[in-house]
Amino acid sequence: MIWDIPAHHRRAAERDILFDTQGGKCKSCGQEVSLRNVIVDHITPRTSGGSESITNLQLLCEDCAGRKRDSEA
Ligand SMILES: [Zn+2]
Image (cartoon, rainbow, N blue to C red; front, side, top):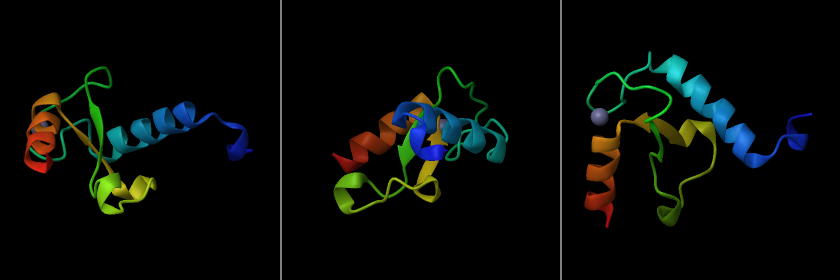
């Protein structure tokens, strides 16, 4: 039952799926990333009404995640 899985485990599973989908590359710059340093980013920020669905998630390298955070601040 998926509902029995703690949220942080579900998020880890989503990260693995996204990692495969994106071919292990940052969605923004295409740089290769590893599961250790990849950032799960909300495409539409939660503060702007973005959902927690996997369709609103992407993986970014730390550089791009930092730039995106700056531009949204
Ligand atoms: Zn990047």
